[in-house]
Image 1 (cartoon, helix red, strand yellow):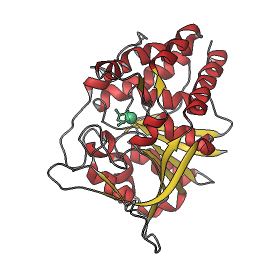
Image 2 (cartoon, rainbow, N blue to C red):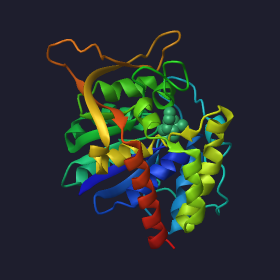
Image 3 (tube, rainbow, N blue to C red):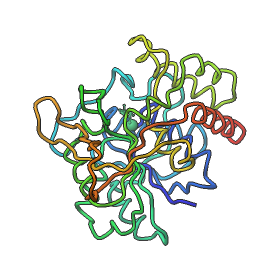
Amino acid sequence: MRNIIIDCDPGHDDVIAFLVALANQEELNILGITTVAGNQTLTKVTNNILKVQDYLGVHIPVSMGYSTPLVKELDVQPQAHGATGMDGPQIPEPHSKPTGMHAIEFMKKTLMEAEDKVTMVCIGPLTNMGLFLKTYPELREKIDCIAIMGGGINRGNTLIKAEFNIYHDPDAAKIVFDSGIKVVMAPLEVCYAASILLTETEKFAEGGKVSRFVYDLMKFYQGYAIRNGWDRTAIFDAVPVTWLIHPEFFTAEEYEVYIETDGRYCRGMTVVDTRGYKGELKNPKTVLVDADREKFIEFLFKCINKLDRIYA
Ligand code: BDR
Ligand code: CA
């Protein structure tokens, strides 16, 4: 059993990643959720995860983190996630409240109390994680791995060469990537390799309460792919969570990765050293480079169907 904290900015794909974790609690012990501004404002993304939990009757503690990146201005993503950050499903506003503890104080308390090490699953901008490591460096010993959705090997999405989560707070990402803690990175390439076909999402409409909720999420979320003429869409944040449970679905390589914090065109780029020169790597990251799409999608449906049975 692996202890995890999910640091996120929900966000359609963040919510699906959360559902995958929720469906696998025999393997993933979710100690808490921390939120960070990214896809939408901190208030909105926190509201979204509380809403989802209330809808299912799940109450994992949610702690709010930073409302802006370290240095940059806040730059939200309504084009992908809508005005609320989770447009699509019509579910009631939440009654539950966040813990009242700041995300990094929640991380501190949880790590101090944990008997075993904790995996940090970071699927939003890395502001909370970076500032946690700066503020409480002594607690890094309690982290066994930071599993990240972020960056690209050769490409970006928000900028030509910068992926949204890293682009949004490159300064925080640099702290995390330079920390020396084991980082597992799910870049854009592996997420695209694991994409769901737009035709496949139709199957969610036939399922139970959770499937239909996912269907409503996907109907809005895949609008971005449709507008771009694509036949599939990546559910980015579900990739690192799935890797925790089924690493055999993925191909991984060890690469040094540096974060570009300056640059006219490339601020927020993950500079991945794929040159393959011989010699010892200084601070390698485990970079997921490919995925077995069929297995990933089959597993996703299995998780959501399982939740249909639990949260009928
Ligand atoms: C990442 O950016 C957000 O839009 C998604 O939630 C994901 O974490 C993909 O670039
Ligand atoms: Ca996200």
